Length: 397
Image (cartoon, rainbow, N blue to C red; front, side, top):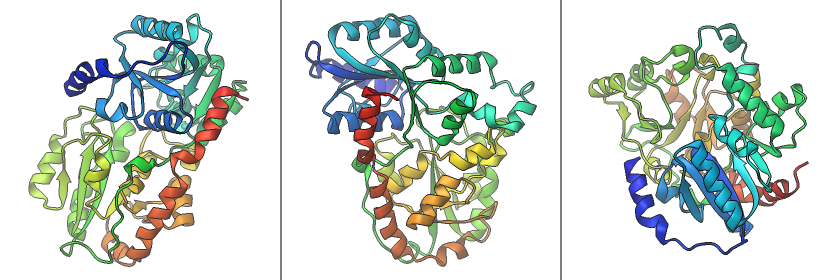
């Protein structure tokens, strides 16, 4: 994080300023991630709109590609002052805020303003816990479910000028709770900027296959009710038995410690934990492997539900396609299952462990699957939703 503050201090001052009363779209998120990058990028490039990011946790060189200005806020009162100054200088077409926590959106909704405030749904504690029977049953012991945060999220959804939904789960939540705020579904997409070469091959490198997982995963001492779906040390011995290399790249935004993972890696030549890689470089890094691993048993998490199963899909699925990798899934999530079935950009492996994975891989037509990756990621590219996103921001209904 210090590196990004240094780059911000060194470079941001020298960027070109916008014109007075120029049209702008402002994005506010405490932890700026790929979804905001994609929205900022496509609106900047395709709609010729000046884009501004106000954030706390970010990767400077990555985010500056999609935003004409970046501003760090230190507190919610500071956030309010920053946005007020932008409102005086520019014509704010819309401000897109986030939850996690809801407090960052509350201050923006409650301030004096002439501009509309939209909520982009990355994740929502209310949404996840609402549909999860297990979470409801264990809410007295599961401390991460905060009723105060849930109430704040509901207020934001009810009082925003528009909602951009990441999944159909939120559409159902809004409908079932009779919230009248205009809402539009824009699922995550691929970004052509990060497309890596797809190199056809029909066999493993050096006679051994490799699988990669890039993103958030949890130490083994975390609560299994919350984190059991992505605690990977128990899989190590199965990958070794299959003689398939399992490569893990942690999220650069989460400073977790992984002692059990390093211990497993020290004794297991097929289990590898790497240093975190920045969001704009991870595609190049993981392009060297054969498959992206998304065969996750999400049902282990207390926040999983049948509604989540029907509608949710993590961003890493698209990251793998951008990196030129076919994706291995378990068929649990309907959206990934539908994409794989329709495009052939990966395959479904339903075992709870990697037992039998080598045989499943070697039964695939690798050359055709790689071609399918190219077609799938083109059809899922972010530019395809540029006009409808901009239309909704201007005219929510």
